[in-house]
Image 1 (cartoon, rainbow, N blue to C red):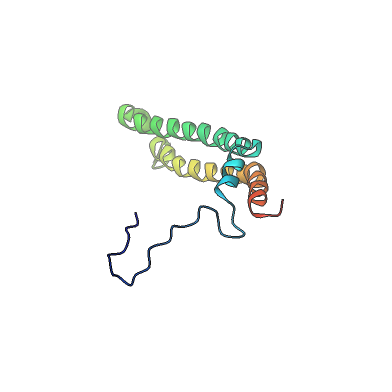
Image 2 (cartoon, one colour; image 1 turned 120 degrees about the vertical axis):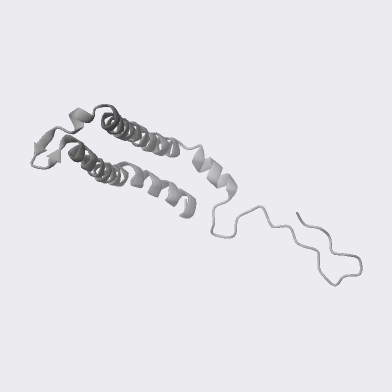
Length: 128
């Protein structure tokens, strides 16, 4: 909020900023236009189509592990190989799942998300 300078002051009144973007930068209207475009809808659908199922799958796996650790101690204590039991193997598999999901996301983003976002960026920043 800008207040006028006090009476008799040498201070110039504050200038309100312009609502348009600086030269070479997209305007708010261009952002809204892109947001309402089919490419943007496709980008959101593609992202959500990957992120939501992967999040659900990981959370189900994680909570299954936690619940098994809490309520199925005998099962989790089942020896598999030497001192390794099922609980240790399933616990370590949480790390494997994290790396697997990260790798799958990078692959999905490179194939499906990046080309669409590049088109949208070109539409906003490039000459069109």
